[in-house]
Structures are given as structure tokens and as C-alpha cells.
Length: 140
Image (cartoon, rainbow, N blue to C red; front, side, top):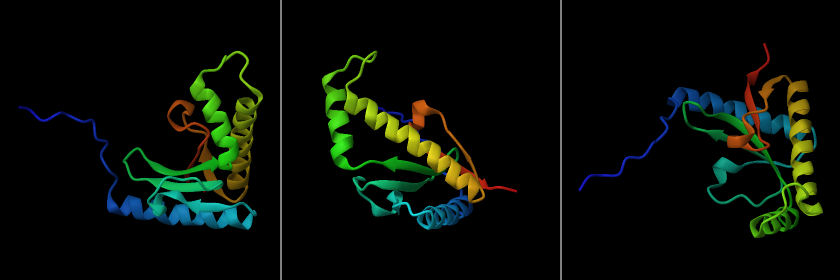
């Protein structure tokens, strides 16, 4: 019997991970200074249900530092429950539209705040990263 093959993404070197960890900590400090609730979701070891900016390091070669906005569970769950039941994509329920609007607006705010604080940021591919913000590094 042969072992199943899995497409495992190669991990970045320990030096690169260390640089990303330091960058993630700087991102957290700047978001806290701006008054936003922020936490390191990758360091907590469990599912994330806290609202605010979830800063995490993706350890893969193609990874990096990402910031994802999380709403209160009440809003998120209401939208996801309706979404799971099936919705008319051309006219989604108000709570689904509201949840999407909050995520989009917070992504724009995070991009602006982090750029102003001196970070080089981008909006990554929405298909793979939703409304996250990719922090590339510090501006030159």
C-alpha cells in the first residue's frame, strides 16, 4: 500500500520566521497605539473568536505577516448561519451585506493605518485571503 501524497508547502527558514515574528510584534504595537483591539492569533493555539485585529505569521515560504479583522461572534455567526442555509447572491440578506461591509471597511482602515505608521502593505488575493491585509515589511 502506498502512502497518500500531500502537497505540503515548504516552510520558511528560522531566520525568516524570526524576522516575521518581530514584524508582527511591531504591527501589534502600532495597531494598539491607534486604539484598536489586537492580538496574536497564531500564538494562542486555538480557534479565534475574539473581535479585533488578529495578527499572525504564516510560516510558509510564500507566507508572511497578515492582519485579519474579526467581528463580534454575534454578527459573524448571524451572517454565516444565513450564508450556510443558502442565499440569493444577487440580493443577500441585510446581515450578510453588513458583515461584508464591516470587513471591507476595516480592511481599508487597516491598510491606511499601517501605511501611515510606516509599513509596506498590500491587499492580498481575496480568493485565498478574504479581507486580510498582508504586511510586507517596513517602508524604505
